[in-house]
Structure formats: structure tokens, C-alpha cells
Image (cartoon, rainbow, N blue to C red; front, top):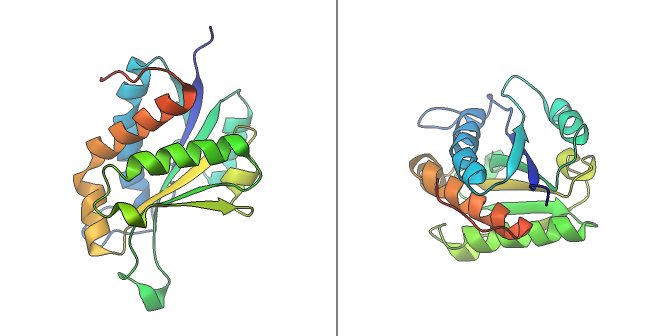
Length: 182
């Protein structure tokens, strides 16, 4: 049997600054780096973008191979009038993709186990985000939390390993393979 394959697409947005240091690109790449040993141990092959690329390049690279899932990792920011007031993960999927919806549901259910306020974890159907609509593979874009919210920023930056492990467990569940600790 062929190993499951995933394309990992952490944010390429260094201009989304975190109030206490770093930026969206930095922290999402840290989480992706921490996921890789779990995916490897679980027999899941991966490819990934690099920080010096763009969303368009990530989509082209994903579409140049055969992947069972395209996973984009981001953190969110509220509009200026609500800055610091919104919290919680949003897991986006292409509205017309059953596999994307299934993956988003698994990821959201598992994030509820580690996010401090599980009731704030949502799945969100979407028809406009390029990484959902232009990728050949079923795709999910996870906005892990709001980096402009102090509690969410701390949750992301202090839980890199836990978030990575949780996301890797979700990927394993989606592919139907046993999760193995790294």
C-alpha cells in the first residue's frame, strides 16, 4: 500500500506581527517543523512550502504532486475595530469538498481537546480562499487562533509542540493510519 501524502503550507506572511514577538510566518513554520517527526513516525510522506514563497507558489507546488490532503496553517487577526476581542480557531474547508469537510471536522474536533475554550472552535465552509479552491487535493486552512488577542497569542506561542502533535494526530485520523509518537 502506498503511504499517505500531505502538502504542508504554513503561512508565508511575515508582515502579520505578533505583539510579543515573531510573526505569523515564524510561528506557523515552527508548528509545521514540529509536526514533521510525528508524520514521519506515522508513515505519512510530506512536502511543504518554504517561507520565501507565496500562496501561488504553494498551490502550484501542491498541484505538481499527488497529495491526499493540503494543509495550510495560519493565525488570524480581527478587523481593527475588534482587535484583541475575538478568540478561537477557525478551520476552513472548500464548501463543495466532502473530503475537505471531513478533514476540517476531524481537525476541529481534535483542536477542541487542547484549545482552552473548546466552544470557540469552528469549522467554516468557504468558496473564496485560493488554497481551498485552487488545490487539486482536498484542502483545509486552519486559522489556529487570533494572534492579536493576548490569550490566543500566548496559547499559540507556548503550545507549539502540543498543537503540532494534535494536528499530526488529526492527519493520521483523516488518512486512517495509526498515530505514532516521535
